[in-house]
Image 1 (cartoon, one colour):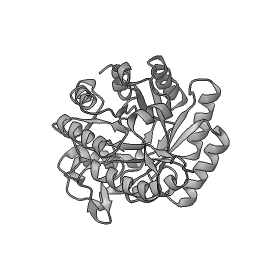
Image 2 (cartoon, helix red, strand yellow; image 1 turned 120 degrees about the vertical axis):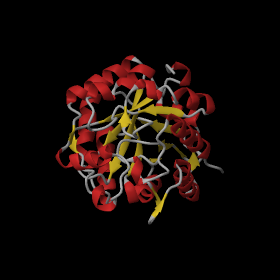
Image 3 (cartoon, helix red, strand yellow; image 1 turned 180 degrees about the vertical axis):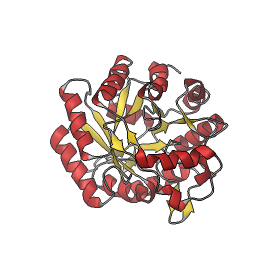
Image 4 (spheres, one colour; image 1 turned 90 degrees about the vertical axis):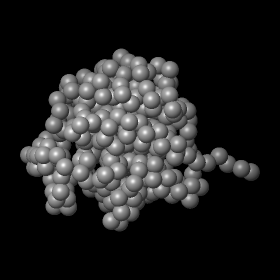
Amino acid sequence: MGTSKRKVIITCAVTGAIHTPSMSKYLPVTPKEIADAAIAASEAGAAILHLHARDPETGCPTQDPKVFEQFLPEIKQATNAVVNITTGGSPHMTVEERMQPAATFKPELASLNMGSMNFGLYPMLDRFKDFTHEWEVKHLENSRDLVFKNTFKDIETILSIGNANSTRFEFECYDISHLYNLAHFVDRGLARPPLFIQSVFGLLGGIGAHPEDLMHMKRTADRLFGNDFRWSILGAGKNQISLASMGAAQGSNVRVGLEDSLWIGPGRLAESNADQVKKIRQVLEGLSLDIATPDEARQMLSLKGVDQVAF
């Protein structure tokens, strides 16, 4: 008697605010580069595309909707992927700036950081010495004294706008307290199941990247949310593939992409987002797991459908 295999959602975070352009020549920066990278990641098997934008001249993270509108329609036309727009943007932005793209384009899915935290990027200054833009060094150095602000009011505001547009959320939980914050908003009826919980590991200021940290996150989420959530794993940097593999073996979905890690192996830069998608896909298929299609991901996460977005 045959049994159906579990479907695993692959999210690809195409470009983001953590890494700067000087660190990898393969990081997409211009709208055309972001669109091409996203389309290739979708073709490689990513059901969800998590998208930030960058100033095409400086490479600096931007939440200007005019930049997003240069690549969102192209991605929608070329793929069936679920588009997930950031509301995180950059720790250096105000909440008003961060929420502009999601409010404007009403995506099926948007990210939402579930608590304030120290956000230490400055150790990268010890690993990288040559930078193209002056802002890059300041961006990293300033993180010594940086709190990524996500207050209860901030979270409530973003949830309210998303709920009004039927946008659902990828709840990014960088620590155990963030799961309890999410439970608070579930109790208030502002966050509604099925919850898509992205457990984030290995960023300085959040939970570590030890396998025991992964298990602690999962045990806590199971206790708080029971069967009302879909779990996903994001391992930063060198932890990307290893933690995603551990999580997938225990029932999680996975996230890869150049926002989270510039690497494909020890000392080797990933040449594309698609390369990372293909690598984790090999792991998943080696575990006899099926890769979820975009429409299967929509069903699993109860998304409103691509015909309901504003781009």
